[in-house]
Length: 174
Image (cartoon, rainbow, N blue to C red; front, side):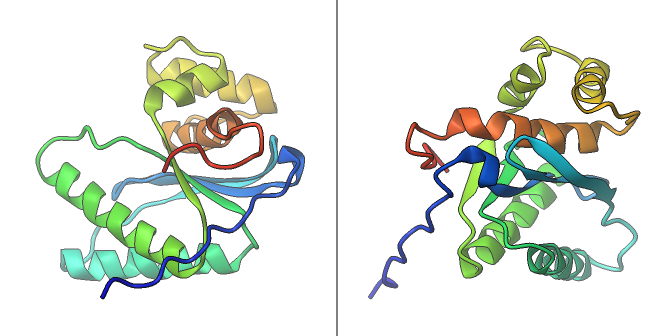
């Protein structure tokens, strides 16, 4: 028998009251941003390299996600949907996303995927922009001096999130 479906938590009616955790997931350097509506509150990055095994790295990833979830009462979790790596990086990305989805589900966190083109467009960059242009646009938008494209992409996920919600602030797609 399949498990009973849980109702999706509602987002606040007004976007400005939506606390979001946004991620650019990578084993090498995961960028993260916390935003209240369109206001950037906190950002950073964390790498998950140097572990003895994939299992150990994935457990550390899971523990880090749980720490991040416990740091705030997030209404929304957004990720850059980028399964375009090659070889082993692709396998690890999918493993990390599976754990993220399980952790988000267990915490009742609605999750959206934002395509890289949506991230670029939300920052004001061209749809085919290279990483330096996205960093530049994010720096201009928030008066920052970032040089890390993973942090810039995570912030871009937060900037793109409102366009992925419908008029009633429901998630259009997961």
